[in-house]
Length: 624
Ligand code: ADP
Ligand code: ZN
Image (cartoon, rainbow, N blue to C red):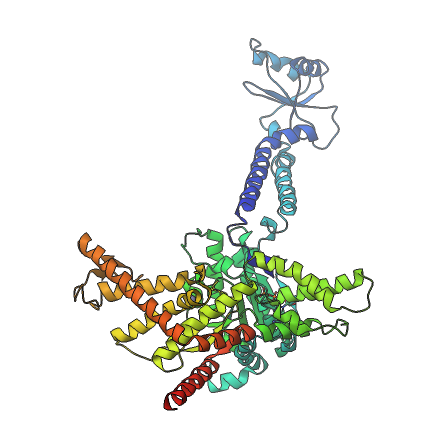
């Protein structure tokens, strides 16, 4: 859901407030605990009762003293006239100049028993009043506190599974998930495994214990996980990582333990952990790690390692920030499978609209394709929302069916929200991004004479890049020639070149390209000895290749300045060359860019079809 995009920092002030509140309540409770013993005894009339000295003298005069204990600074006694089983003990402080021994004869005469144990007579009751009552009080306080902290508090220790959510049968199938074909394909195996674990275990094959669903909020990660459970007809356990953030030390860990215990009881089953980055973010990262989070993470790792995957418990986790996850989570045997759940392209959006209008009465004039076209960058949740808004509008208007106008009007509200988040491109932005991406791909295709990319898309990517070009996996190569590196530079700068060539503008979309190109050119000059002016001299050394690969300049300042000039020249040269190449093939650039604009995603094969067709006409023209 879109609003899930909160980062872990935003919950913090609230949590601090809550902690302070809890600390105050605990302090008050402890204070009362110490104060309340004698006080309560007084109130309840259980402990010894203090009386004035003359009341004691009266009792002596009336010969009413039953037992008496005379201590240095205190005289305790009880009364014959007191008929209770446990006689009330009274005490009084002797007057300073009265000889205590003077009290003995009158007491003697009254038949009092002298004893040394009077104050302990009510020991049991006294203990109850001074210990157990305050303890009970403390307990009640904690109970109230638990209400205050909304169920996540101390009261939740151990058993409470308030936020674990279990569905015996989700009823969701792959039919309910539109598009996302690649993600579905990767999940089919898991479903098959849940259906029939023996098939796998009898061969000795081990299935991955978990898969990580990566994608922007609202792209359908939860839906996919439910669909896996639905397709396999297994129970679905889900919990959100952010639930753990609110917890006290140890609670998260015990909840994880319970979760796995419950799930393996009913295995085969799916465990779904939403927002796993909330517990799984890198330990010792600068977000600061909290011991409760660390404990929870450790428990999770232990459970993942500990359970026997042949039983058929599969863990799916979702995140939109895979880069912050702790490496330990991603190790082999844990979440080593990554399933990308991308924003839908045109076809995907159309399919999503179809799914969500299945149970909606549509008027004749509804054209869902047009709606899909107008919603580039919207995710499944946006589209579901859009359809619902449209239906509500139709009801408000007193109509029997949703018409196109309803859809287009609610589109504005939904898309306005999405635009704010920067995920929906305006028309002109789409055109620029389209040319930019084709610029990269076309330079590479023309220079290398081979298919350079597997896919080009202008659908904003999860990682924040507007559109992207998926490179073909590099052939296994240990050596790269200067020519190849120059082509790579031209390819990197081809995006900006196309923007400038076609629109005469320069956009921020090229920032990452420029960064990459610059580091590459810098390496060529300062480390690879590929510049004539500098020659074969290493100006920079890489300190620790295995840590971060950062390099440090180790040369005179003049040389460094010279290197910078050289780097700039290489970059500018490559940029000009890319621009010239694109200018020379301007028609081809237009054709492909417009095609991409229409389809939003094209494959490398489609790109090459255009390139090859144009090459053919060129040679034909040359021959004629
Ligand atoms: P995520 O977990 O990725 O944040 P959800 O799975 O919670 O997203 O999606 C929220 C809602 O959006 C779903 O319940 C569904 O109605 C709708 N939705 C998202 N993606 C799709 C999709 N591919 N097909 C159909 N509906 C979708
Ligand atoms: Zn680019």
